[in-house]
Length: 475
Ligand SMILES: NC(=O)c1ccc[n+]([C@@H]2O[C@H](COP(=O)([O-])OP(=O)(O)OC[C@H]3O[C@@H](n4cnc5c(N)ncnc54)[C@H](O)[C@@H]3O)[C@@H](O)[C@H]2O)c1
Image (cartoon, rainbow, N blue to C red; front, side, top):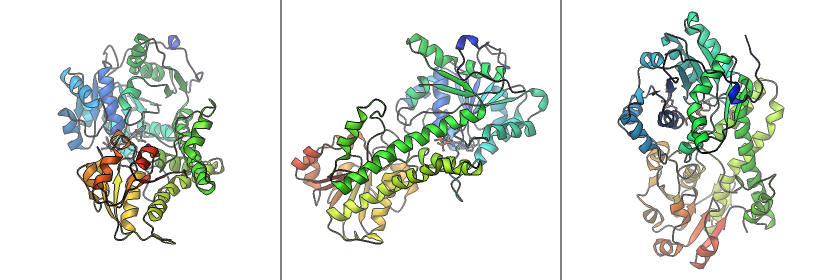
């Protein structure tokens, strides 16, 4: 039976329930220990919960169990080691053990773009839910946390009905996740909101107990974490709507950058000036080489694909334009490179043969090692394809970049990357690059030319040091 909930429930109205395991607070499991699941498992152990992180990747689990975070996320290593030592946190590849342990199981597996189209690949969700459901031996709550197309939680319910013993009373909920890589620990411990899609009071109470640590921490810091309790479809849509909005904001300012380029305006001043209007705000309003990563690009595509299936494709047609604006910015770097290197830009792009180009940045943003759909790495590959001898350096993303683009040449540090370069392209706004000394770099390059793909450099300083400077959307 569906119990309707108000869209925002006062916390005092939530009746606490005893977890099925009989423990005083629910035992939690996180299935899929990537950027999302590992961060959650570690942070929720830090909040005092007993936790198992489960993954099918034995190598990843061995690293985590040995106290090593398999990706770069500031602050996470220390929390991992502390909570392993405290005995609250374990990692496992054993689904039976995981199923038996947990009261609340969070599904955190990947939902990448399908190879054959724009929609989301739900095969990992299907495999993890099926394996879990088949191994449950008492009542539990399965909570979808991966970003999914609207309707997926209903489908997870059907999978559970098919694979779990119907006597157990297993229930399903959906709770989207908004963490940002680079700030993930803070975002999980101190989220700006918690959204849950539930169908019963029991599910709502269990999810509340599973997040009580977050609410308690907020209370001790005199903060409040808003809780939005809603239905499955709305909870699923909240996540993709938020990402669609953020992607649109970035592409909006990048569209303005294109107009500035055509008219002689400066998009950095334009952004500052419009950002003072509180209705607009200045965050996510930096023009540059565009968004990337494991979320925004695939999420706006999957959202369009799902809307199309639902007969609402027209409502999201603008997201196609958002995607195109974003991808066009990558070509802009090639145009600027051709301009600075005095090469012709033909219909097939520029011919950059015989030039050496340093690409600073391989990750999709700073403070992460994530290179999924990174504009920087895509541009590096395009520059190499145009004939340039490209040298890539990134403070954290080298290993992942090598795996993703094995044909590129990688340099051990920034100085080696820029040595003898005819052009330097700064494509990820790492502080190492923002604060680099243009005088020192000028001494090792072959030509003082720089493309600031993130508008993150102090152009005056660079010009004073003798560099020919080009930003995005700037004269
Ligand atoms: N990374 C982020 O910043 C972020 C933020 C919000 C939401 N999300 C969403 O969270 C989900 C996961 O993203 P991610 O970045 O952590 O991906 P990821 O690729 O880093 O991690 C996915 C993990 O799932 C594991 N996995 C695959 N099949 C499995 C199975 N059957 N059982 C258990 N584990 C399995 C993989 O081995 C991998 O470790 C995606 O839907 C993503 O859109 C990610």
